[in-house]
Image (cartoon, rainbow, N blue to C red; front, side, top):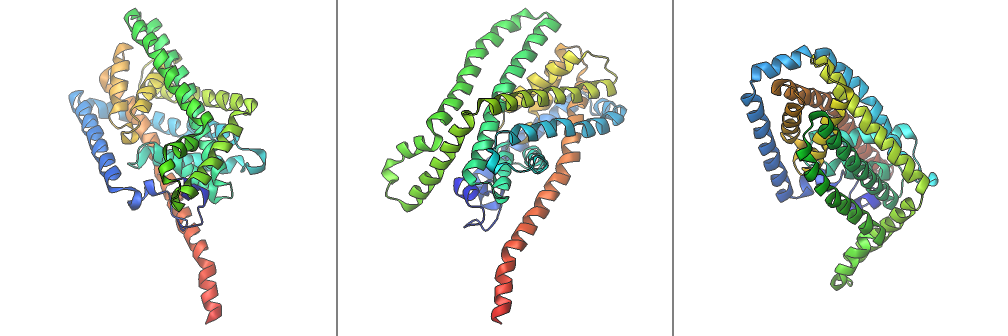
Length: 361
């Protein structure tokens, strides 16, 4: 991954990251397909158990809501692009529309391609590197963006749990929630601490026995550049704060999508219900990141949390399926645009060689 992002025009020949291609590892692909199949079976079970006909009718009744959710999603998408943009050093900062475009492509891959959510994050770093950003900087900004996003989502999920306790009076949920706070803080703090210490510095220490391996030395040198870029990002407190605020705005904006879907489904619920559903269900989906697209996990969360809020199971499933419809409506064009861009990049990369051969002839 490091080598490919650091030098996208080198040995990779401009191909997408290996995790997204046939060369990404047969075992990884099999595991992803198996997990995706399990998620699909869980989704099928939930739909059948709660009445496929009722779920279909609930989705049809919310037709205008699907279109509204798709259009409104451009707001959090732009906020996410800005969150990433602000982390770039000014000398390497690409135009904001370009980074919003890359966020769209990365999100499309994360939602629709069976490589888990990690694939989309690798891809946007790769796309930034293709456009002239040093590979270490591109990878570092994505890692920083992910870390800040995890911090904000942790707070957002805890807020949702607190609102759920208030809305339902289920004080018995307070103890598990409080017990989870130290674990969440430990996980986030550990992830941050490892980055500040140096991810690749740590790997280099663990891999001293490979010190004489030329491949390992190249890997370590490029990794040190990423470590330095990460530390530089975290030293910019203003950019970190702005990124966090923009990410929080994005999460609140996605809650508006849930509220729109609730209204479209005929549920006159307060906006706090939308925050509860979005924060907790997406927290569960993030925890189960290894399941492609959170298939089945998201739907189970909607049914469980929706039931606690008095939302019928068929309507809760319809809300999740509206979200899936939005992911497909924006994700399929995103994948097509990505593939078109890859073919164009490969063609441009091969063009000088073809021209040279023509001159020799």
